[in-house]
Length: 272
Image 1: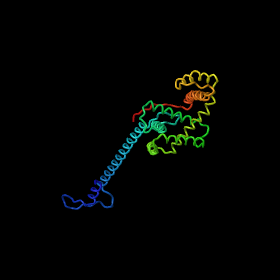
Image 2 (image 1 turned 120 degrees about the horizontal axis):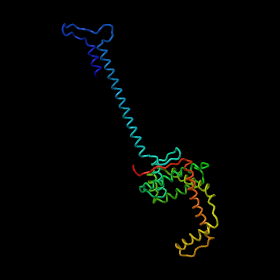
Image 3 (image 1 turned 135 degrees about the vertical axis):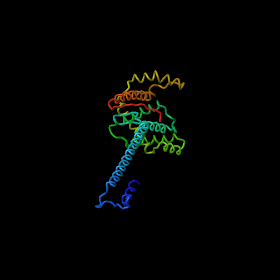
Image 4 (image 1 turned 135 degrees about the horizontal axis):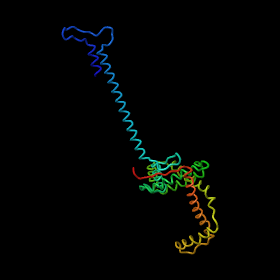
């Protein structure tokens, strides 16, 4: 409005207030000093307006970006890391829901901080162990077969196929993704077996001692019948003792890997 009004006023001849003579713009086509002054003020005003608008837009964009970053940090904080690989709060919460789904516990009960810390540790160590795999077994036929059998077992933990599919949808996964997660579990078990079972050899004395001090009293208390001879239960006792040794060796191995792989744990909470 300011620029247009000034321009029209300049183009209209100006009448002299005393003589009534008409005074026209100067010849030669050049702008008069008055017009040049008006145009200059108009251009400065437009520049100030554009600069102010740009500044406001940049400030607003920065504020939105800052708020978005803060919100993302709150909702998806890092709770563990392996080197430069981060494990977030949402990763842990999803893993908790997946564990409950695989157990047929759906909908899952709200977890407390201690439960989430345990899930965080398990998830971190699973990822750590998969990095120790000598070869990629994600498509190993034997592991896929075992995982498929596991998936069939998961389905049976639900009262109906409809309930299973509803839980699967709520989890945000499909059968293929569940199968891949089960294959990863089998991969981890194989890594542990191949690495640690050879170190878990037993002495005969350990088996006899367990049979005498643990198995016999427990069997008598729960069955009220004659205790079977050692020869009949020796294989069962050996496997129990081997698994215990493997658990001990695994804990020691993971502790050794933590500084090597730069594993760090940070607090988890149930706050949103």
